[in-house]
Image 1 (cartoon, rainbow, N blue to C red):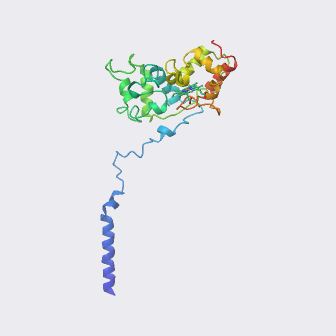
Image 2: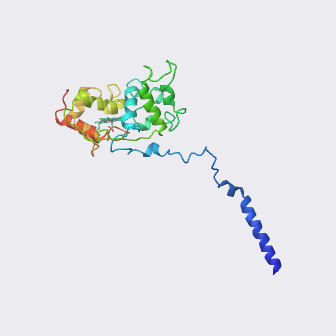
Image 3: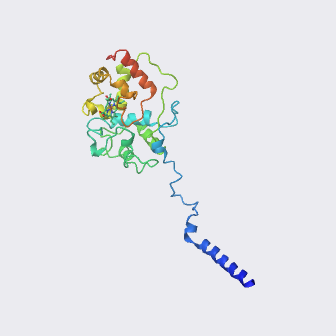
Length: 250
Ligand code: HEC
């Protein structure tokens, strides 16, 4: 009987030791000093954070819809450069998905983001856009946005109230359409046969009763802008007001 107890004891010690020295057991113990681990980085904000702060724009945050997209549309997604047809080097900067594809933008990492490298290039022959370095303000917005994780975040710029009086084509509509639609609907690219960078092209699509339904994303219309968040409510309301008032060239 005594012998049996001793044998059991030895066996138990043996099993216990085997566990302690089992390499797989040691491996599951995380090393708190290991800083290469990426699972604590909020990389999931990159594609899922589409709501952002919709109740208004927080000035400490850089938003994709109001800060970043207009820079890309105005400086890069123009005909002859990175619009959907031209696609210099296979790159079209017309919506979030395309701007953040491959290594153009790497969340949290300026060094690996090709776009950041190109826009801060010292060599005048290499810098993007080729017309010359963008203003420091614009470069800084892109820098902060990448360091924020390059989210597809959205804010409603006129959440405090939307002024729909005196909406004109030159003062509002043309600018709004250029900002969000230019990369695909300029006079050269004309996706879907539509150009929205000139009054005649816009009027034609208003008369065909296709503009409002597309931006308000009503059923029976192809939702626009393609691949982007819906335009903010105030912009949609203002464009509707302008259409309802006769879509004049004012
Ligand atoms: C990424 C490219 C892209 C962007 C950005 C884009 N469009 Fe389009 N748009 C297209 C394509 C492609 C079509 C043709 C779709 C089809 O016929 O299936 C189209 C079609 C349309 C149509 C016709 C839809 C219909 O149902 O008749 C309208 C109107 C339109 N776009 C307006 C806009 C407006 C306004 C914007 C900006 C607020 C915009 N688009 C931004 C690519 C784009």
